[in-house]
Length: 172
Ligand code: FEO
Image (cartoon, rainbow, N blue to C red; front, side, top):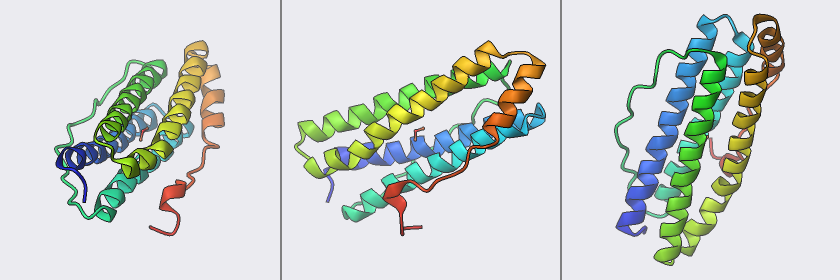
């Protein structure tokens, strides 16, 4: 069974991951409305991954014999000034998620919850990838913010495919 503080922190993180999925679907909707289906697909895949992240936290809390306490998911923003703005928001959001996961890892260390510390290692590595992917898209979008170049970025982004995260193999 999880320590009460840890149970609350992990439940809160599951909620944050569901919010991430919601946020990226809001961005996908904005990009669809801008007739950028490739970039919208990139965001849809991102949202799928976030739902998986939420599920990984959910499953772990259950595996530890504790109850998942989900919180309120706020409404995501509806409009973005530009594609660059979308990815600026993505980078900022991913950095917040990284800080949140690091905070839980510190809590795990402080209460000597070695199992949770090890569980979080996958997320610590995943956040390095998540931040890098978002930063790369931001750098490209910022350089290419005109219609012709965005069309090319849109085509490239459409190649992104969803891959089930390893901790969910055989569990969904
Ligand atoms: Fe689940 Fe993008 O952090």
